[in-house]
Image (tube, rainbow, N blue to C red; front, side):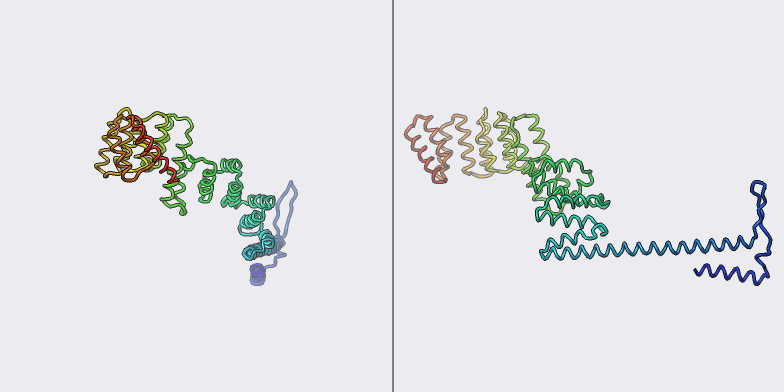
Length: 391
């Protein structure tokens, strides 16, 4: 308005100072299709001034309307934020019904409408109203912000796993983009899904992603990797040397050095008749450090060259010192080589020190082979009595 007043005053000043009469300044003529049209120049100036004033007033009215609607939007957002805060307080006080209503009130006007609907969905889930919960999830998914912060999808995926709807969860997962799958919450949920469905290979494939999550430390991830590898090997129903070896080599080097995994793999080899391969793997690991579980498997191997295995056991006795486990492994290989006398010597050391049912049974078998049936019966009875006490 100030600009308009300035322009009017400026025009009046020019008229007064220059003795200019706008109605007598002449005319502007122009021709249209042979007709001559004359318009006073003063009228043109007046018309321009009127149009300018109208245009300026229109802008002012438009600005007022914009400000009105902007103020209304701000007020609605403020009410939505207030409702969200109030709902959280009521939820904390245990008034879930009131909290759910407040979460939904003015929800679509909130800064993040998804948060309102997800909070309401959580309450519906808590009171086991699955129909309302799913409806709220659909409402949350309808807002554009969900594309950048897909909390509705994440919650839906989480609840599917919780309700053991694994097939549906897998279908949802297959339809997600790679970026969403890399979301920290989704990574943790995928791990949970694969654990529940026994897809241990998938867990191994996502170990690099799991390492990014602060809730999983290195020790836990190593144990997880080991557990998955053991389960993968135990899934083998029919042994395929090429396939199993490929799986074995796919594990990290550190895991392949783990005694529990070596025990599972070598036992699988032994059950399938690959005794030499199992012997090599066990000997290489036992040369590095003694492990009683692996030593027990090593002693049980039916080797074509038991004396070679006995030399290895003697080397370990020199390196690690004598132990009942080494004596048992040596006794088993002596039996395998039909070296009955040496086998008895090794077993007597165990029986005199810490007798076990296995040692007594093996001693009974040796005495049976040597024709000492009475002694064999005594040893066998001793082994059964000791086994009964241990139970």
